[in-house]
Length: 374
Image (cartoon, rainbow, N blue to C red):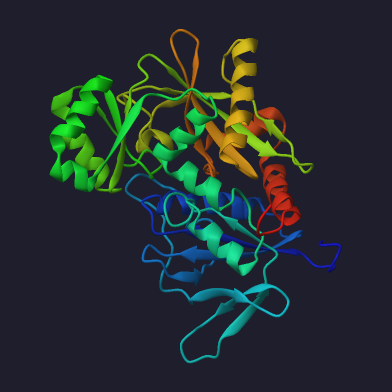
């Protein structure tokens, strides 16, 4: 119960969205909805349809499960529209249905934004919530925006002295007008190269260009998801290891044990099917098999990356452990997945913080933190 009001904490779980990660956001929401204790929380499931409409969702977690690459869950855009607005006592939700007057759902104590990708994880939703004066889980506007854009994230991390892979960027306009200049920059980097939508996630639109002959298809595939593309040197022979970061209630940060993803079968890298389709072959080591010194360095670098970007609440920091033992920060994710297969909750469970307690921690941090400049 909320001691101040002797009622349950009202949590609006927002999921779906307009990005290519819509389905993964729905799966994440299903897991979090199950984890929120109904005796402690009054949960309002808010879906954002692929066309941007906000609706009052059913909260049917069964419908939000991922059954396969060809059976992806989505928000039901035909459900009653809902809007977030200021009320006399704070910020509340209003439902509008045909042939009925607007219906208030009441004030919201905190929003749990489980959107992945642009128009949600990139600071846009965070800005809306700041304007409405609503507390929310996770990073603020700037950290969300910087971390979503992999090119700018590299600039910030490098400026803080953190190691990143060499890279270049291009845009749809430059690729169309001056393909030769893009190819020359890529030649200087050297092949193989990974080509990624600069503001994407869940490995959607990522391809590996083994040589110059594969570059065009890789860039055009990434451009189908984002008009800005990141092209970076492939970390050949590296291990892919992740580490979780959480804020503490006193404003410090703590890190999880690292975990390793090992790709088996026909997958050359950690693509969408390897991440999310249960039948696909991936092997996970939680915790990762690392020596104590490497583990300590990785956990320290994770906290450094979290602070460098100005994160709040939580983040997952992804690393390459190079063949010589050096560490390179691959990227930082401000709203990592909470699906049953996601590494973030697994790492924290292995560290001693189970799923339900992890969700409680995040809601508690959001309630403690105000909106506005801080």
